[in-house]
Image (cartoon, rainbow, N blue to C red; front, side, top):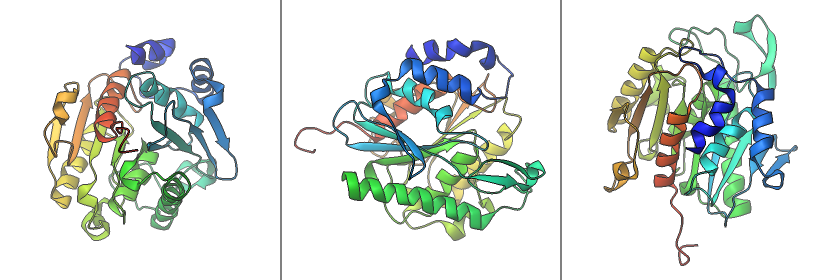
Amino acid sequence: MVFEKILNKFSDRFNPGRSDTLKTADMRTVANETLDPGMVTTEGSYGFISIQPMEKHTATVIWLHGLGGSPHGMLTCANMLRENAGVEHVKFIFPQAHRMAITGARGASMNSWFDCFSFDYENRDEDEPGLYRAVERINDIVSAEEEEHNIPSSRIIVGGISQGSAVSLLTALTTKRPLAGVFVLAGYIPLRRKTKEVASPLAPTVPIFWGHGRLDFKVKYDFSFQSARALSSDLGIPFHESDKRLTPDDFKEPGSAAGVRFMSYDHLGHWMNSSEMEDLHTWMTALLPKLTPHQV
């Protein structure tokens, strides 16, 4: 598989039990080796990098990096998806978080979507104003795709890893327009004690892919699993749990993508691996199928 081939370039960093991430420099190296430079554009004024679709643009994925990360760190994982059939029509956008002092890191400055008062994800207070500022920024990107590229919001998926997935999930929970889906990788629910309060009428209609490693010692697996279960209950949507790989057959029945799809990965820490990318690809292609000529 292409996923395995690319990740094997840095197999030492994906050993079972290792929870740290690939360094941004490493990820940029792989991206430069595997991406056509003409496909990658940097939108400095908007603060993001994008990969243009290989075919006519009819869908968009907005992918947010985690705390201390950068758009470059997400390029390789997106390229794993693009190397497999089914996403040739999809544009990938990687926003850049602003640099700020992080309270929980003793004021250290790093790229962050909002302030983290501590890294006790279960009990900490949250930067609610910062979260909503980040959500507003993602909504601005969705609006730009609608207005400048004629991509309806129902053909846009938002997602990310860790802190980026929290912003993505809050974007989906508070959305005032239909979204194709949201994916959560090594993530958590922001403002989880207020889910029912903040959820819009459209929130239950957004399919959720939630991937989490059993060896994640930053955002603990059990905490993530219970949070996802609580989310499905709060929204009144189905909860699907599996550690088996997804196939297109899982999405054949109408409405089969609805709800929370929680995927577990035995040998994964606080990052992504090839199995997760394969599952994300299967889910993504089910939600963003290619359009027929008369639909375009």
